[in-house]
Amino acid sequence: MQDNSSHSRESASAGDDPLGIDKLTVDYDYLLYKIRDYVQSIQLDTTELCKKQNEVMVNGIIENTIDKNIAKFKELLEKCDTLENHYEMLNQLAIDNRYFQGKNRRGRK
Image (cartoon, rainbow, N blue to C red; front, side):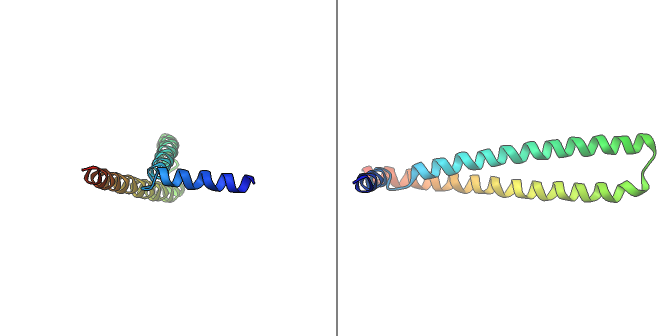
């Protein structure tokens, strides 16, 4: 009996949101969360690398650590690329949102 009532609730909620705006909202919020997390991670990594680089310069230990630091900076660049991809997804969501808003307005006329 509960299966039928939960199924009817799912059908009703799907009928209430035929364009999937609720899912789009959840996806948007999750994407913002991921972007915020990436930015914080990049910030921490950058700060750590800069501190290490400063220590290297101050202590004069340059030869062996430069290659390691370059590899770390390459990792940071990869994270930045991933972050850029997330922003592109946000932009696509905004385009989709404008499309659905326009479609919704035209449907009401």
